[in-house]
Length: 478
View (spheres, helix red, strand yellow):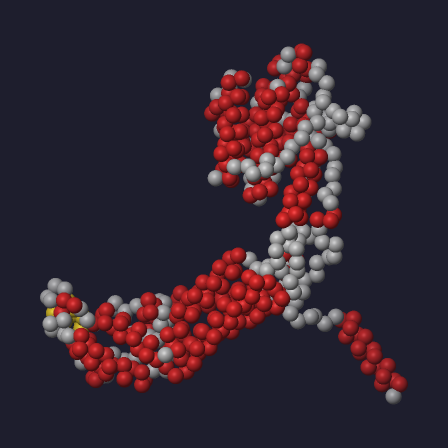
């Protein structure tokens, strides 16, 4: 919504400036000029509050400077506080209706999307005598520009008098302090954050490794349901499922058919063939890749102070998802009976039907499953897999504790500093639109140059050379 509003305002102001009639009346019509200023202020609000760009540019300063040079007046621009979408839309509609009615222009012409660029606006930010005489009455042309001090605060007109130079002196505004890497928007710099990030990163890498071994161990030994395993192949009505058409257990069970252990989160054990390398194994491999990648990424040196003492919201969300998923997946391995019940429930869905309970009772199903489970558990790798699962649960729980520690240690935003940054930026833009230079307060930025910190300090070559020289000197003394 806000992005669309921003683009619509840019198109409207661009069309007003490109039209000679409305451009000329920006010089003489105070009401039109005030409405134009409101639109520039709305652009400024969207840029600061929502960080919106159009064609990778911020247009408030460009249109503001253009209006200053068209009107030849000292104008004030400022972000509208607590601006809403409704207010922005109301200002936009008011300007469209006014221009359409007063200057006899079709609304479609005003709001249509024409080519817009900084060069086009520069080129159309000059009023020559021909345009003035055509659209402005004589009494309005001779009005003196409104200046406070003719020596110090004279409007920036000299750079725009010659249409051939195209206004090349228009300077693009600098970054908002919030976007500057030197700006640190928090009150404190807790050193514990960096160590907690390292611990989370190491835990994630270890967890990915453990789960990968767990999965490979599970799929390395398949369980045979074939006819050569006669004790098992005769169970569950000779491995048949309920046929709804014949109303009998006469539909042979094909390996893998109707089996999806992913809903039990038993991703590692594949008694029904190698299909689990793809599903749900594929999902697991993708998840492990992201876990390993994000774990390594937490060891990457920060690019600025904000990045050093914080962690991204997406990373935190992924970590919470990771803890919930892996604890639910592997906590059942804490007890063998939990795993057995998971399989029993799943087999019940496949091999037992309430419609056929007269042919195959629940007691018969449970007896068959007990025989199957005794054979299956004896031939499986539950022992080492259970150990790995418990380790995975412990690591995941530690990650959860580290997340809580991050929340407890995170720095608090410096609200006053953020407000001061907004004020300085608005003041700088206002001065820039008048053709004057303004330096934002250096107190907004960190005085010390940011030096990325690494877990393992790199050895300086100068230190190595000094040590070698000291050793040589000691040997000479001997």
